[in-house]
Length: 105
Length: 154
Image (cartoon, rainbow over all chains, first blue to last red; front, side, top):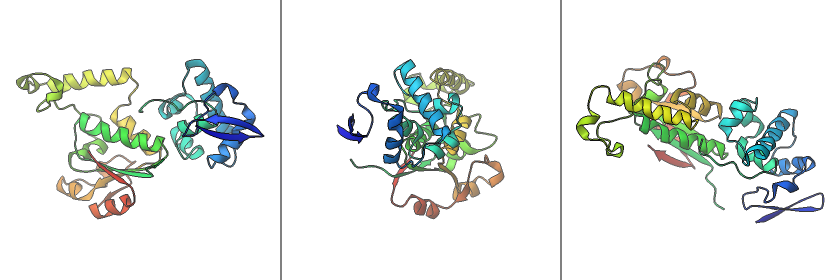
């Protein structure tokens, strides 16, 4: 377990950086998490993906894989990797404060 | 925690079960943020062959994992039937077909390369391959590209 401090609030995260409790996430936290992931600015396209991740998590209890993101989020795979170079599903899940998406494809 | 930064995967077989594992590993590596390169050699070249990659078949001969009698595996049409069966199962699980999967992997930014020795052996040229193939390279080029990372041979 690790802790990330955002605006004076301590957030418990797993060893690999995912929120332990997704309900404590707020949109205002996204920019700080993104910076720690090496993403300096969150564009409207980033936000499209982040909100999609969040919505899928709330609906299905888990975040989508890159394949699902590419098919359903409206952002194609090539662009997803430009937005989130260290793995779109993984990085967007971290920034959206949800657990790591499960799945091999 | 130790991290793998780069993987170079060689795909040397031209059967369905010979090609998918390497593709899944390459796609998974990119999803984890690793650099990934795919190197197609020998019959693995069929996976990136314009005319052949839509017709990759499961091998039903010499494949004890299928748990069918050896003679049955050799019956004409068996390979097609088993391939269709496997493909329908994969579709239900939303596993992409080989052409779609390779296109997807290229979109993730992974490199796709054909092995020069095999290309020469089969009398192929760059035009025989899908557009996503970045080049025909030698084994030396492959090692240079793979330097500092993990090499996986399938």
